[in-house]
Each structure stands twice: as C-alpha cells, then as structure tokens.
Image 1: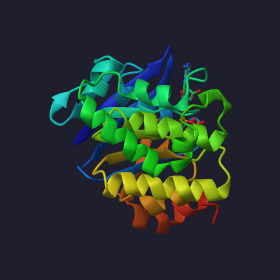
Image 2: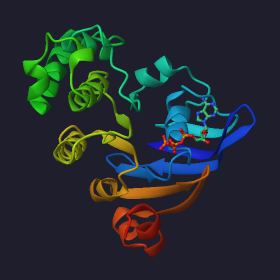
Image 3: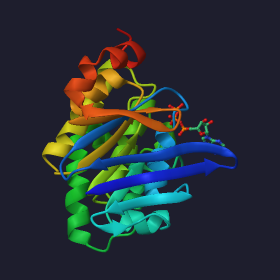
Image 4: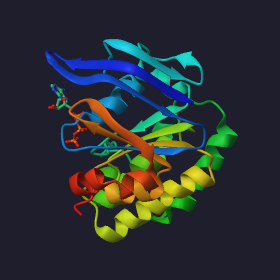
Length: 235
Ligand code: ATP
C-alpha cells in the first residue's frame, strides 16, 4: 500500500533521514519506534508532503507521491494526525470535525462518518459545541484523530498519540486505534515513544536510530528482542 524506498530528508545541513526504506501492507498497523530526535516525525512528514524529501521514492497504491503537496496527499487517502494535536482552538468540536472533511463533497457519507466518530468518542459528542481549545489534552487528542478520520483515510499516520496522556487514556486511545484498523479497515502508521503499547497493537515494527532504520520485524519479535527491550522497553 505504501512503499518508501531510500528516502533522504534534510533540514538545511542536517541529514535527518538517511536512505530510509519501509513498507505498509493493506490492513496493517505498523509502528516506527526510536529515541527523541531519531527522525520519526520527519518520516511521517516526509510521507504526508509537509517536509520535502531530497531523494528516494514514496509510492502510495502504486502512485509516486513524493513531491506532492500535503492537500494532494490527503485527497489520495493518506492523512496525518500531527504530534501536539494542532486542532483549531477557536472552533467548536463540530467545526473542527467539518474541517477534516473540507476536501470532500459526499455529504451523506460525511454525515455517516460524523456519527461514527461520535460513537468512537462519545465524549466529543457531548462537547460538540465546545471550543476545541478548552478541551482537555486527552480530548484534544481524540478530536485530532477524529478530524483525521473525517477525511476518510485509507492510511492514517499517527504521531505520538499517547504523548502526555494519563495511563487510562493511553489504554483507551490504543483500543480505539485497534478498532479503527479492524472495523474501519484503515491501515495505520504509528509513531510512538511508548514502544511497549505500540508493539502491542502493531503487526510489524521498524526501529529508527539517528535517521537510519536499524531493525524491522514482527511486533512480537521486536518486543522479545534483547536490544529493543533494553533500549526502548526499559527492561
Ligand atoms: P521526537 O520523538 O523527539 O519527536 P523524532 O524521532 O520525531 O523525535 P524528528 O522530530 O523527526 O525526531 O527530528 C529528527 C532530527 O531532525 C532531529 O535531530 C531534529 O533536531 C531535527 N529537526 C527536526 N525538525 C527540524 C527543523 N524544522 N529544523 C531543523 N532541524 C530539525
């Protein structure tokens, strides 16, 4: 579904991604784990077109998407939930959700998706007229995921969805991620510092170290790997 081949991304002179290759098959949850500054967010932003790649190829459903604008990428069904949420604080929950669907014209289907996200996150339904900026951190994260779902993604790019959340909420967010994958058939590219949870929900994973993919395996094998345990699972 998504095939990244030897991409190189720079910030000025900083070579943030060095020949990174990875792929996601239809229906999969894959996770990219790594330390702070390893290049996880940069990988997602390279895919979504927010940060340009200098070389390499990114193919989504057979089509080359590197070099496209973020809007063009979204229209193809590849939607990113950025780290730090970035919802519109002045807009209500409902208006934020409408923004997620702004590239779509299929009104009846949009209405169905709105019902679906309210069912996934009843808390957002209760707060539909509340300004986004007044939501709690966890609720803003729910809104950011829901807004992305309103774009009807085929592949959802999630950047640190558990960041800053209380343990119970972390658990809930990961359950929802699994539901979005199994019920909605949405493939998921999950970037996480919480490697423990990420490897529980993902089918496969990649380890990124200073801009290089150093390991890739099934999530179960990574979770059992001695180096991964030491470096990322605190065991
Ligand atoms: P974290 O978990 O801390 O978010 P990350 O793995 O997502 O880390 P990135 O944010 O992708 O890492 O950063 C990769 C490298 O690129 C880091 O060395 C970072 O300092 C650098 N970098 C990221 N964004 C910029 C930028 N806008 N300008 C310059 N350097 C940047």
